[in-house]
Image (cartoon, rainbow, N blue to C red; front, side, top):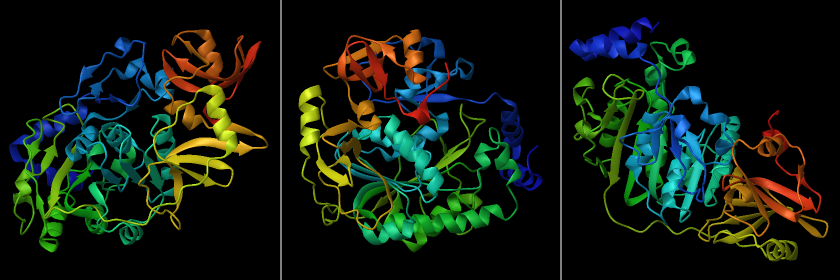
Length: 445
C-alpha cells in the first residue's frame, strides 16, 4: 500500500500516465548483476542465471533471481556484483577514464564504487566515502571482494573532505541519501519510513552534500548527482537550487534514449537545463525509479596538487614472500599501519587525520620472521606459481569455502580458485592444504 500523500502527489504530476505508473508496482521485481571487468581468466559458465543485457550498462545484465547467483562461489570470488539495473546508470553517466581521480561521496554499500573501479581498470585513484561507520565496513568488504587495488575507503563527513580535497577530483559521484520512493516496490521499510516531511528534510541534506562535492571538483570536471526517488523537491528542485547558487556549473546534455527527460515544470523558478537531466520510470523501462543529473564545472584546469603520502620501506619478509611464491604486486607505493602492509596508488595524497578503513590493496602482516598474506591480495591475484582451481560444483570447493582442510601434495602458500577465479589462500605441507579462508566468510557445507 503506497503512502496516501505520495499517491496523491504522483497522480497530480503524472496525470494520464498515473495508471501505468501504479500498475508497475504489481510487476515482478527486476534483479540484475554487473560483471567485474577486473576479474579475468574465468573458465566457468553463467548460463543458468538466464542473463540478458541491461541496455544502458555494457557490463550489466538482468538475471533470474530464482537461480540465486549470490550463493555461487563466483560471487565470493568477485566475478560480479548484484545490483538493481537502474542503479547501474549513474556510474555509466559519470564515465571515468583510466588514470583519473574519482570520488564516490556517498558510496555504501559499494555497487557504484565497484562499477567505477571497473572503469578505471586499476589506474588512477578512487576515493570511496561513507559517513555511516557500519555501512562503511560493508563498502570496504565489497571493495575487497571485487579485487580493487586503487581505492581509498573513508568514513568521513563530506564537509571535512571538502576541506582536504579542494579542486582535487576529475569526476565525482553523489548518489545522495534520499526518501527512497523509487524503492517502494522492493523495500517495505521505504514505504513505512516515508512521511510528508521526508522530501524537504532530504532535499536540505542533499544540497549540503552537493555543495561539499562541488568544492572538490576541478574546473572542467564532471559531477553526477543521483537519487532513487520520484520527488521533484529532491531531484529537479535540488539541482535547480544548486545551479542558481553555483553559476560555474551547468547541466551537461547527453543523448541517452533509454531515459526520460527531467521535469522543470514540476519545480518553482527552474534553472536552465533541467530538461536535460534524467528520470528512470518503472513503467517505462525494466528497473526501479531513479533520477540523475550530469553537471559540468566551467573551466579546464588540472586537479589540485596535494602533499603526497610518504612511502614505507618494503620489509624483507614481504620481499622474501614474493620471491618464494611469485606473487605479483600492483603498481604503487607501500604503506604500513603497524605490522600490516598496503600497496597504494603512487599519487595517493596524505591521509593522516582521516578515518581510513582501507588504503589500496591490503597485502598482509609482517609477523615474527615471516609474512602472512591478506585475503584481499588473494582476490586481486590472477595466478600464483602454486595454485589449484576447482570447478564450481566440485565438493572440494564447498569444503574450502566452509573452512575445511583439503587433500593436496602442494607445499607452501597456494592460491585456491573457482574455475580460474581466485578465492583465497591455503598452505600446503605435502599432504594437505591448511585452510586460510577468512572465518567470517565461511559457509556451512
